[in-house]
Image (cartoon, rainbow, N blue to C red; front, side):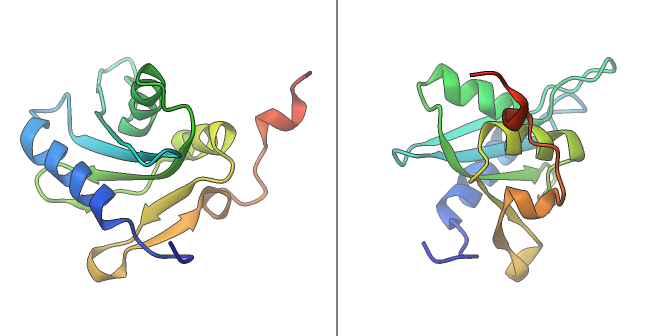
Length: 133
């Protein structure tokens, strides 16, 4: 896929999950990720007043639970046809730490594009740079 190109199948998978399974205030954002071997993994956020995890964080665990430890691209979409939702600051940091070469789909409508996660968090602290081997 060329730089900036959008994985439309991934966006469609996230939209499908949001349309089918997002309910009430507890599950309002769906995420989809493409694994290095081409599989698509999906997830929903788990809102809770104590700070439940965003859809992107649930996606990381769901992917690992399916043996997909390397994600190449992710996207999140809101329920009620809100479209693509950019990752929050915490998710940007975690996505960068887990997958430093990840592409993240952002934008609206015809303006969707895939950007490197590093561009979403300039001058970022990189957790892996400070780990002991």
